[in-house]
Image (cartoon, rainbow, N blue to C red; front, side, top):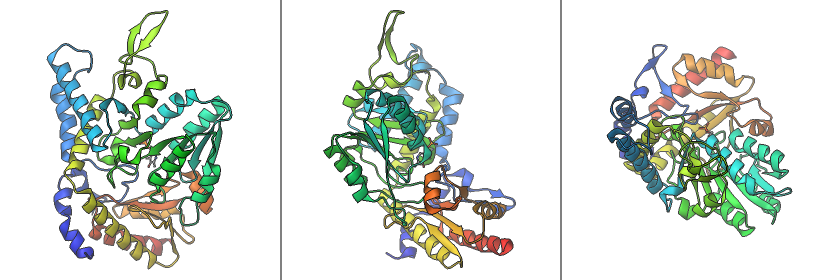
Length: 412
Ligand SMILES: *Cc1c(COP(=O)(O)O)cnc(C)c1O
């Protein structure tokens, strides 16, 4: 299929109509929202679910005998079940609600980290988000473990030969991003997981950029942990998911102590609740969990193959148009990429370009995208990043390219 045909087969206008925030003007111009890598807009069913929860069903969960509490508990646990099915997790107690990707990684780094010893090794990569770097550094300080980093090449791809050399019987954890938020690179995680398991290491996948672009099957991947954020997959902020294999979660000590995570508390000794509650201390983000369930319900209705194909068309079109601009350089040209385009323009600061784009109604992100080591590798202060979702269009890319050309002219 050519561009026109794919775009026709995928009814983007029907999808856009369900995202109210897309339909507005900023500075008197139609909003073009290309900052999906930072957070996505929300479909009406997510907004309605949160509104309904607070208007009608608001109640604390897991402990009330009364009607509303049972209703809220039911909805929250239904959301967990829906998410479990969507990522094909074997058991619902393997699906933990967290505060987001950052929350999930910190939980694993702390709690799985408690089982590590001095000299044990952890492998991450040079393209990780700060939230998949710093928790492991904190663990390494606490437990005197060693952090190793898989390098990348100029295209922004992992050097897998170097990974082979970093792996050893001392490797206890490989924590790696599925898709890079700064470069768009899709990493060969299947191969990485297999190689890590061959030396007895566990694998955590940072899926913060994945669930919105592709289907995820944690059993097929055979990863040990998988984390993502609600707000990047068309759900609310402040909620996310940590999938973990039951036998690992069972063996890990609790992360935070408090209500809901206990079986019995006395001053002498406390015993802990079973999964998933053991890792869900305190009143959770109830409306967030319910909203995330609705976001997943929204995704279920889409053909993710068609979504992927559509987004690839957007990516290819945007990249081809960008490359026609003199002095523009793409940062991140991996063979396998998702719909994220990072670039710089000779002699111009990304922030200045981003500011002028904003004044023309185009929302992009500029800066280091929480990946300072990636910027250091390319010896740049930051990039301008346009990141697309399935509700974006070729017409929006045309507006963006036009606005970008104008911005460059004004700054030169
Ligand atoms: C956004 C992002 C994170 C952090 O997600 P939060 O929602 O801020 O916790 C981690 N990794 C990647 C790849 C991301 O894109």
